Length: 94
Image 1 (cartoon, rainbow, N blue to C red):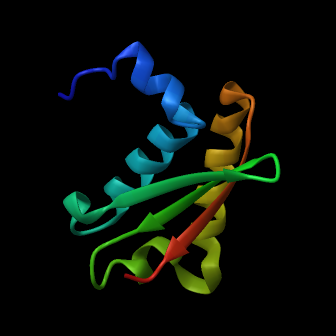
Image 2 (cartoon, rainbow, N blue to C red; image 1 turned 180 degrees about the horizontal axis):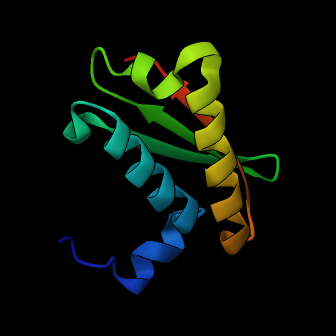
């Protein structure tokens, strides 16, 4: 199991709870969990979480008609309440 981040590291990551939930959910869906990357950026009062997955896994994350992606966004936004932040989740083709 991975170690908890240092106190200083948590303060440098915007929306740490939302990021951790996003990473956990996406890694559990894809075939190659080690290829999952999340880039964070802030702007206009929101935190943007950009997810990149391995080749062939983008379809799994998006799902039919985008339902899986929308469900992931809903769960991550709920987790962001704990961070007192608004988040947008984008899925990017590598």
